[in-house]
Length: 299
Image (cartoon, rainbow, N blue to C red; front, side, top):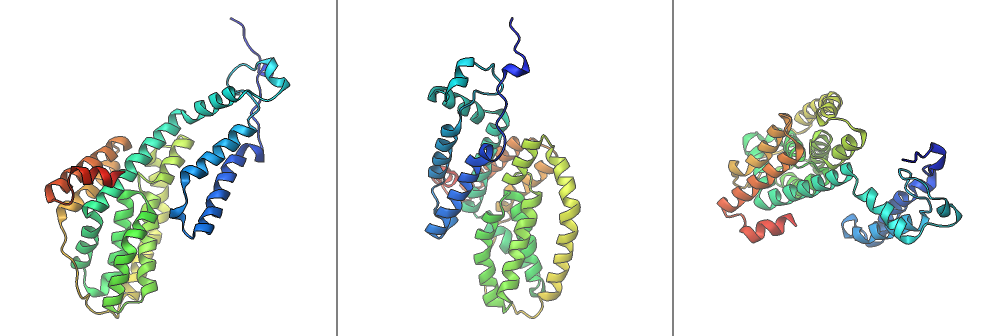
């Protein structure tokens, strides 16, 4: 069988051109977010299609992992070959694994919120703590929710309205209360086993989730303890919250199950499947949604 030397292979193109599709995607996303006035109004599919089309346009080398064909050096690659290279990259094992995890994590976060897990977590925390600890209580609730669902942005969107109501009815400073929620959200996201950034970092670098967790907790935990102590001091001066909604401890179970399973080292795919199944079962049992509503919440 003929062996090809390294000189007969096409070297991988480096430099700004190699990362320009990614840069284009970021620039387009930011520009469209500025125009629309919100990150969440940006059609990500359109941004992806434009960046992908640009990537296909600048591709004029065969896949570096395949023997180079001399005739391909004389001109640009045929479009079929470009699409083939693009598709092989999109089907890379770690990339597809990250995609599946993103889908399951998003479904779990959305369905748990629809089921009432976030509201129950916050209400349980507020009922368990005196008014002097409302701010650190919201901080702990944000840490727990973000650690469970793996998204700081989702946690902030869910808890800031609650924090605003708490600040209004208790007389606490609104910036302090919202800051506690944002800080807790980023703490949990930093340590979560199902955070998108954690998954990308560990999968792309070949690092175990447990190793990344142990490294990060040495940095994040001391900062969280200091913040908690400061919130205990700064959170004085409020009065009782006018109304705290009822909560169901059962609705917090999916979060607890995901955390415990992840800490025990269960595969992240199984952890997310467990979380989704528990969320669906508890939501159906408590009447939070029907089967159609459960599927719709995960979409």
